[in-house]
Image (cartoon, rainbow, N blue to C red; front, side):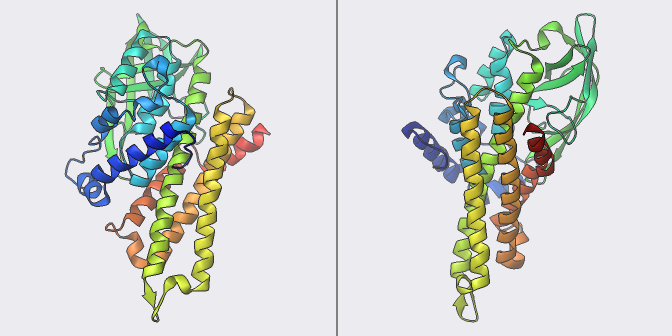
Length: 368
């Protein structure tokens, strides 16, 4: 298993792979997502039953792991299977925020998440820089806070019951629990390029009680920063699973497909391109391993630089491997009937998620 170093991590990764092979094979997934009403939560109860969700939480919060390496093992397996369930958004990113909070509300939301009963996602729009100030504004209300603003694309907003909305106000950054059905919140759902769902959130004078503002031992800006870095690590780990699957599919195709009476794998030019794909996959695996080690240290410039580097390498490798896989499969590489095109779409979505490679290159340079 990618990233696994303990027997428990190996076993967890293999269990996730077996479960996904049985329930999320390509044809089953494709049929489920092409339905008039796509079922994007089909695997969520099984994630809860198998303990996959609990793996993202530490023992103090009723989980059993909660470390970066275990999370990366799971996300690499999910990437290989192209699972669209909100594991990264809900269990990892929102989970990090909830685990950092001392509010009783956070404990209830964690319990519901681990049990597979609800989905909480971070709603944060800072433009091209995921570490920038939130676009939603917060002002004091009669009994708590009032939120106003628009969030352009919140991944998994179509299936979320709870939003953790990051907001900027006179007292800096704060994070608020906003139930889906609260007055003043409208959600316009849509399909994303990779088959998952998303939505545009508009908050118009959303009045919240004081208890809805999550309390933290540190400041909310630092908690938000930490959660975004966990999200970036998760995206990079997912890329490792995807490029590995693409390489296996492409190398097998080159060995089986013949032209002029000989396998494509005998053509020297294609051998060189396949070698570049293999190297790109090794590079992103190494970058993610380095970032995993960095996540064990306290937040700081060195950890942030390692996370930025992992995202840049993942985006670069994803583009290289995704494009080459399509090219080598020919016209069928872009067809909906071949999983190669679906992997390429997911890689495209990842490159646009939590900041582009260029944004993270600039941030990496500023951290040196």
